Image 1 (cartoon, rainbow, N blue to C red):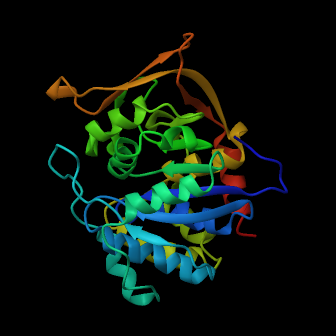
Image 2 (tube, one colour):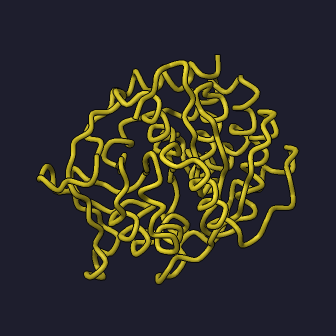
Image 3 (cartoon, rainbow, N blue to C red):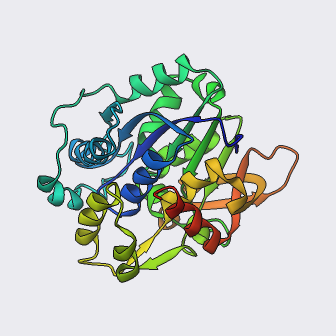
Amino acid sequence: MTSQPSTSIKILLDTDIGSDIDDAVCLAYLLAQPRCDLLGITTVTGEAKKRAKMASALCTIAGQDIPIYPGVEQPLLTPIQQPLSPQAAALDRWAHAHDFPQGEAITFMEQTIRSHPGEVVLLGIGPMTNIALLFATYPDIPQLLKGLVLMCGQFAPSGREWNALNDPYAAEIVYRAAVPIHRSIGLDVTMQVRMAASEFRQHCTHPLLRPVLDFAEVWFERADMVTFHDPLAAATIFESALCTFSPGTVSVEIKDEAKTGQTYWQPGGVRARHEVALSVNAERFLEHYFHVFQ
């Protein structure tokens, strides 16, 4: 999916910014990445409007007028596990929009993709609810994408990851979709790219990273580490060699209640529909990530 350095890539971001800090770390990267043409942002899961405000704060600092749409808050069939956006507590220190279109996120995604057939990469870094509803409502949309890149699942070994676990039925719908490039970076790989809070603070000198650090301080009240789950997924859009990928088929457990949300990966096969990250060059990724802020 990597393009030539001089060309930009159109991206739609679907995010649950405001829970784990990695979403804000990811959005800052996209706003600083010169090859990213960010067409819009949709938010998902509890307090979607507050999450939209957090996204707006970063876009405001970046001086970019990005369309932002609060999306669906409730999972399709299961109880919500992420009702709050705790990092929004730091919003009062940063200018941001207060009003957003309501109930239009799915339509916005559909219209944006349809306006740029074969050009848009949909980057999903939250529970899959918005994306599942998009694909279920407009069955032709998956084929109109350039690609789908997800921070979702755990594959080697199989396991339960937060985004899949929060809406497993949505995740199953998304993994059934026939997308030209259907790529996942799972927890087994992203957990290899981590940074202590003390070191992360030292890196947050760029204006775009200052509100991220304010949001991060809320996160650091219960964790002393940043794990670059979502930024790694985003970075592979521009530098796919940061990870090694293998073709195969992904499925999501929705029948066994004790394992609901667990993801499975079957490598290879003539009908392989998915790409799954198997490894990451962590040092190269961190160098790549912070280089965009120089």
